[in-house]
Amino acid sequence: MKIMMAGTGYVGLVSGTCFAESGNDVICVDNQKEKVEMLNRGEIPIYEPELQELVLKNADEGRLSFTTDMRASAAWADVIFIAVGTPASEDGSADLSYVYNVAKEIASAIGDSYTIVVNKSTVPIGTAEKVASLIKEENAEANIDVCSVPEFLREGSAVHDTFHPDRTVIGAPTEKACQKLRDLHEPFANHFVITDVRSAEMIKYASNAFLATKISFINEIANICDANGADVDAVATGMGLDHRIGPKFLNPGIGYGGSCFPKDIRALIHMAEIYHYHPKVLRAVEEVNEQQGMRIIEHLDQIYENDLSGRTVAVFGLAFKPNTNDMRDAPSIKIIRELLRREAKVKAYDPVVGEEGKAIISEEIELSESSFEAMDGADVLVIVTEWPEFKELPLSEVKSRLNAPVVIDGRNVFDPKEMKKYGFIYRGIGRK
Image (cartoon, rainbow, N blue to C red; front, side):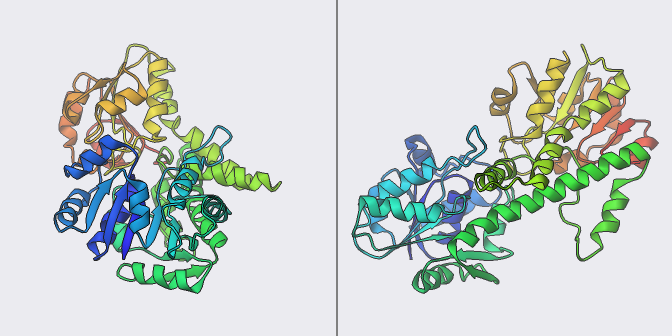
């Protein structure tokens, strides 16, 4: 098939590249000229395992290209995917201006030949109908079906998730569109959910909201464990063995971040309240997550008696999760800013995030080239992102490089028994 992908962020670039890998001809369109030039040179603007190799391979074999010319690409394509950003507005609603701009731009270009337009972006219920209306306003002769095929990619494993999805959701208004999209996704999917467009739009929000709820729930349980001397690891293991609950997303820490969960929770709350429903559970999920990052500060306050002034804090991890350089809503932002507000000195290290992280958080932080450099002369080590290399650090060297053997482990990377054995003052999240 001939596919146009509007947007070259995580979703658009990964999806477009994987469609090319399965034998389709794909043009990825972006209005940022510099980004397109970078991609045409084989340079990838995001950190995502396996992606660069696939981009280079499919570009060399002529199945994948990048351009700023949306009109020409839309006129050429059989299927147009809209995979642009839907950031949160001030009131929490999803900003759909980028989606609607694409709809208007492709409208006249597609003429009257049959074209399937697919919302790949996470969008509120009813967006597909609005997109169809906008296209028809610009081009009354447009022969289109506007569908919803939400993505369920995890940053850091997006390529794997595209090739091995748990399910592929197709919301389509006609059997013709549904079958064509099913054929397109057949090389990847082993389980299809075929439904109406509005339900498909809701499935994405409901899925993300439930996963966020699971995270906030286990974090609240961890906080109760902290207060009562129980071990949340044992609690999560006991819970996860119940097949009705399952073990995934029962990893306590300092809260979720990234480009999806925070904005999608806010958008779903806003969507509900438009229809005069007040979602108490979702608001509680958001509230717990907002507070959870401050558990690190609370532990530090207990150890240092509410005085962090002049202390040097080594912070491990800036990205919101491992295997990505994404800083959107990363817990590190709020934690480091609070440390600076308390007049602590921050030495930060992340294997992937560099100066861009410093620009987002504060110019006051010192970026280190390695984990060892960050620890040298620090009074306390704080784990914010659970990069695998941190778990492999020899504890004897960690202790020797720190001024004091104090570790606040916001992701429960280390074994408390081992930390005690080496003489650390150690605080995890919900650990005995």
